[in-house]
Image 1 (cartoon, one colour):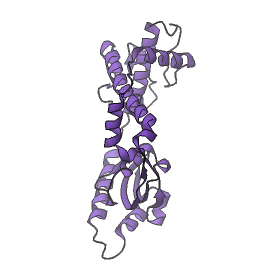
Image 2: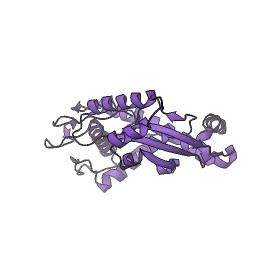
Image 3: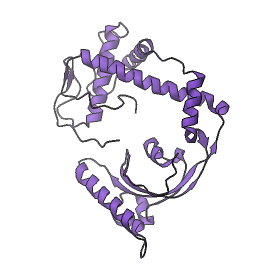
Image 4: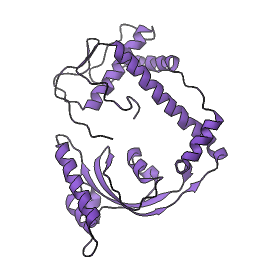
Length: 262
């Protein structure tokens, strides 16, 4: 996940419809989110699913009627086939750790928080230096990780050497859990972990494996996961088509990884 930088105040437009106000400073992701929502709102109007009288939004909040119309638009426009049992079995075999329960990790971290107005490049540089320092610490004297956490971390856990204790995936933000669970790594992770809170230097102190479930017990969850992947792909393609047919000003729609589906 890449950290976002604010977009300079300006008016972005989709087919002439303003997406923001001049006094707003939006992140690139937020601006793209508004652009895709407006593309879908206009498509719903063109399909007769939303009255032409529905007003566009400049604060990112669609009307209730527009939200319902977009839902109907996507239902009729996106083809989401049911995954075959063979595909489900392959997915389960390749991602068994994702369908286990009870996995726990003992974690500590150093958080470099992304806040309003922070210099993200400088923040990342500080985080990378800290990561290198704790990975290179030979452990012969004081606990280098705990010392770094106590002096650098923007998390209250810094006072405890960065200790977060034993965590399950449910205890973490999804993007954070994705980096911690379902892996075999123990020790300081060789990469910065990105989350909605900022950049983390993470050390896995210990792991307790979860219990893997047979395919038959999780067939429904596997099928749902594959349907979601298909939905994301179809949505990307549909939004790309809408963007290609629209007049787009002041917003880069090519940079989005998974528009509207985070």
